[in-house]
Length: 114
Length: 110
Image (cartoon, rainbow over all chains, first blue to last red):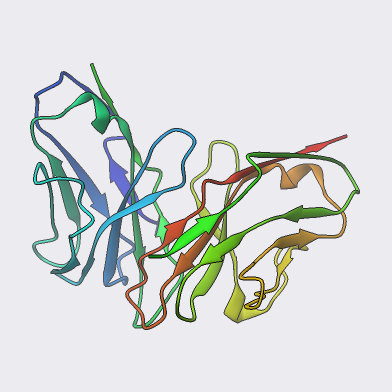
C-alpha cells in the first residue's frame, strides 16, 4: 500500500474554469478528509466522509465547492467557477475506525489560478 | 470555537541543543492533541499524540490542561529534526476534524 494518493499533483487553470481533484485513501480506511492549505498557514478542514456518508460539509468554503465519495472508496473535490483566492494546496487524509484515529495525509494537489 | 496557536514561525537551534516548540490551544472540552511533522519534500505525517504518552524520535509532549498547552520537546536536537512542525487539535467525542496551528519551521544548525 502506497498510502493516500492524490491526483493530479499540480493543476493550473484559468479563472472561471471548473476543476476536480481525486483522492484514493488507504484501502482499509473508512474515513476520508479534505483540507486546504494556503501559504504560511496550517491545513484548514473542509469536509469529511465516513464510508460514503458526508458527515460534515459546513466548512466547505462556498457553494462552489463540493465533494463526493460515491462508493465509500475514492473521493473527488470539485471547485466550480474558480477564483484567484482558490489557489492553494488541497490535502486529502484518511483514517480508520471510530473515535479519533491518526490521519494519514496524501501529497496534496497544488492549484494555481491564472 | 477551537483554536491552536504556535507563536513561533521559525525556531533555529544548534545541533545538540534542547528544543521546545510551543503550542497553546483554546477549546471548551477535553481535546485530543497531536503533533504532525513535514520534512522537506515529504508529506505531512503524524509525529505523536498526547494520549499515547510515548516518545517518538526523542520527542515528547505533555498536555497541560491548566495552561492549555502541548509543547513539543527534545533534549538534544539532531540535524534530521529540521522540518515544519504543526500542532493540531481534535474535538472530544470523535469526529476527528483537526484544527491546525500555523506551524513552526525548526532549523537545526551544525
